Image 1 (cartoon, one colour):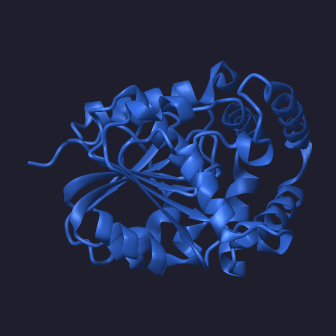
Image 2 (cartoon, one colour):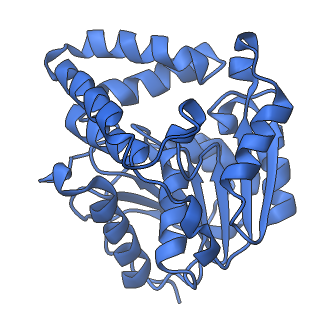
Length: 298
């Protein structure tokens, strides 16, 4: 018997890429959190990154194939989705609560949780708060303390001044037109995505995202350090990172891999690998790498 989905909303999705699914495709309503459910089988919760629509996972779902029930999220305030009423009360605390309620209300049984970037950070925190919830974690180019990459000696407390300045600067863009924001997003994404087509898609999502939400989420990412809490996670975890976007600045694979290993040092059962072809959006830039690891790990 299939469960009734009680939260979510319709996400625009490339249906042609999901034609292998011959069971059900449906969505339902819950304010601010959108969900799309595809297929039948083992529950898989898929969390996209900052400003992204859930359809960023389309090609990944197609590659993973049948045997899974995919619960694809679009988070509040991102890609045109309605923002939280009071995002400054805490983006992660509010959204993670919504996600965990979604899991409980729909009786998802020890889901595999796959998260990209901000979504990976959220997946880690959910597994820390509720260690018995996920059966496996897949973290795509995300770290438990983002600030340490730029400022190795920083703490969550010392990062607040820097993060607050960044938040204010981002919020100042609230009065920009869609065209201005799209152009900025596309320029920024050149270091994160290889193909022009995918840059256009992600830039559109970014331009449609709520600036206040984006600024608050980034502030919390820069001022939250999960490294010492990772030992609470009890589930096997796959971490896939990227490095080539910064090789022109002297970054090498070995150093990046050591950074990842250092940040995940307290995670007991973790496998870490780096793409040698993809930038931040590994699911688009190096699908063979991601899909190969998913099939092996899951």
